[in-house]
Image (tube, rainbow, N blue to C red; front, side, top):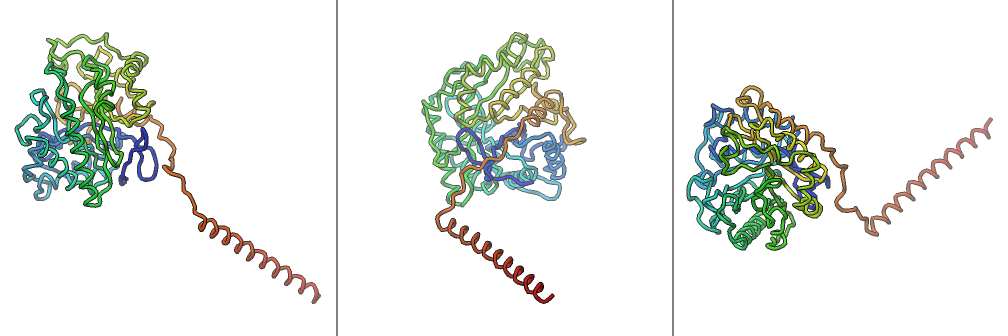
Length: 422
């Protein structure tokens, strides 16, 4: 299976055949934690292509069409050597190979270039909280553009420069949105310039600021997508997709612990989880009206596996149903081989045995993706024949008609002659 170039038309993403396409799948962030991608722990330091193919085949069987993958900026800049199942590759070569394998499995890769943690809110640069690899707008822009220069030959590459930029969700306040607007615009301009220079297709660029739908972290400027009009971005290719995340959160800073992973777990049973309640909140946050005019990608949505009695799985199921109904793309959080985090979607230690076995919430995600009725193929633009083509068609039709008449006359003449000889 191969992937086709994607293009935004109105509020839809379409492939080069004109068919509506949805980026739906899972987050797998481990290329930010080790240059080999940490496949099939405990073999984390080896990029084993046999195992990678097994996992991707399993993901494909779950109906996934997209993988959202994080990379660490320092890995890209320093390009370390990575051990593989046969020899060595550089980190960039590993990503190039990975994109090829994902493409062969029909998977698009949303490549997330950087995570901005709370310390970096006022200055939108830096690798995954591990160091000062990038220092200013120019170095960051060059970093993102360089990814496109090296990997832009892959149709299944999708660019997302930051994960959860500028939050304010931990009380640091909101950074200057104009600064971010300038950064986004510089990156878009740089990406489009290198694509044109090297003859690449135009890749989707994911833009947006962090907030979470359906939780207390929601702020009007972000959750209501007001920034799209207040701080507009211009893409000459019109290939922007807007993102937001969606969690049922009410526990940051709570004595129950970050993300509710440490007992006693905070009681969030009162938070919305029914279809009607979630839909009402989404409508209040204008997700319905915004997604009716813009393509939307929910980069993260998850349910907490430690909250068995809090209806988190119901929340996930109902939210995904609404996204399907509104034609919204999404990737669930997260796919890990280790038993880490509260939002796991696969059973720990199963990558090496089965390629990854889904847990309850993973099955909810897979069922939602598989149950979404694929739209009928739609031609993006009508095919128009010019006058010369119409004339050719008419002449061809007349010639065929003339030939048929001639054959009939000859046959009739032959029959009449035979009758005359009897």
